[in-house]
Image (cartoon, rainbow, N blue to C red; front, side):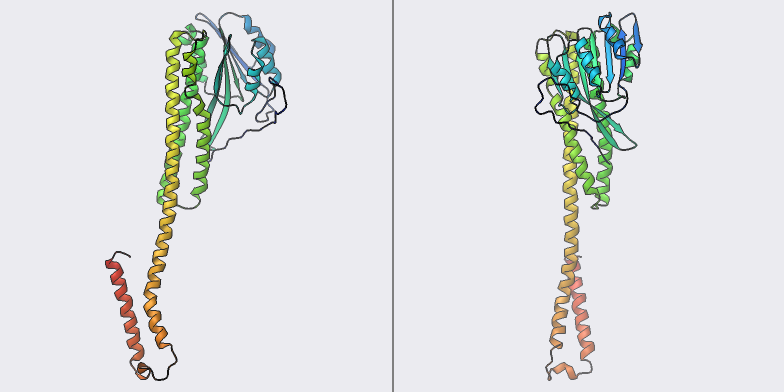
Length: 355
């Protein structure tokens, strides 16, 4: 089971606040912009449109959801920020893909940073992507590092005129995005849990040294996952405690439910960390037990040969007048005595359950 997390780092020291510098994996593909413009009666969906076309939706009626796949084109992020009056510090955080999850409340919008997990079953890899969500009065902007997400169900709900999304405001869309992201945490955690179960079985059946690096690797990644989710704990509660005009009272109840799911995800991650620590203890115990068994066998062998060595040492001395040296039965009697000692000691060890 292998988990790989790749991030690149660019030194921003010395730059003034609000300087737009992309920090993330280098990408060559074009930035993709998708727009949903909907109301209770109608909706419009446009895929892979230009920056200029997406900016025209600012003045249109209805709820606008503009999704950007790709942050490596700084000009796209900058232009959207200027069009929707987004503070430069927020744009700076959007481009910093190593940022910790948080919620910032401004007069005209609310800014969320949250981590999006995805699991590749073929490669057995977990990918962590930063997702930025900006909630305005009649719009939601989402910024993703790359194409591909877990929002297909939300798009289908927007296309369905009878869905609650079509008759709700932008705050409800922001809630649904957060809810789907958090629910997807459990999908990834279930995959991790299954992998831990298999590792635990292998550890109990055959505690080889090859499994130790896997345990250490999973332990490091669980720490990383916890760091990606833990900051979310209480963030929504703190948001709801404030007087935020962008969230209707009917939506706040759902946000509390999302916060409960976040706490459950954190509890699951901590449980997995405890399991991993237990696996490490089990591995060390198995190694110690195996070492003890080896030492036990060596000790028993040494104990058996101590009296035999004593007898052989006596009759190996070069004294001329030793009584048994001239006896024809001396050699077989000595072997019989030595064999009896060995058998007697083995019977005694068996009786004591040392064998």
